[in-house]
Image (cartoon, rainbow, N blue to C red; front, top):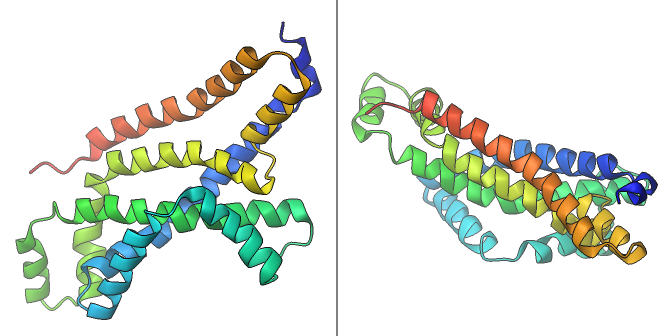
Length: 221
């Protein structure tokens, strides 16, 4: 019943999915943290930019963003992100699109964590002479990250599933392989179940582990 799988690189497709998710997660965490800092910062222009970015990007479909990276950045503006072959270009553009989109959700998850930090702690830090950057990096963000592990885990799980949108620009991940297998094999239900199981294997342990981490590092108030 599973003999047809020998003709397809199932593990390779899911490895591409893992790479997409991992690189996008790191980029989203970095950019999302900067956005969160902007949203709670003292500079009105930066706060306005962070607020506008999050509210606009969260309401744009991810498919539109991914297609824009290919049709807009690459084909129209010639952006290749340092790659020469089409496959690598599309992969990097997909990572860029996922970071652009997911960072807005990371920002909001972190901002919710920042809001759990008592105002008195920030005021005490400023009273001893720390500037905004020092207060944020030394006092607020460490506690915010601890409070945001579970929301960030949910964002990561959503990101893993959102990697399937990269199929729209031809990135050879699990969704592309699923489409190819369905076109070539008369095994619709079986193929769908295999791909779904693969995503469960990726997301379920991730959610359970990060949920456990969230309980361990949670700030006791």
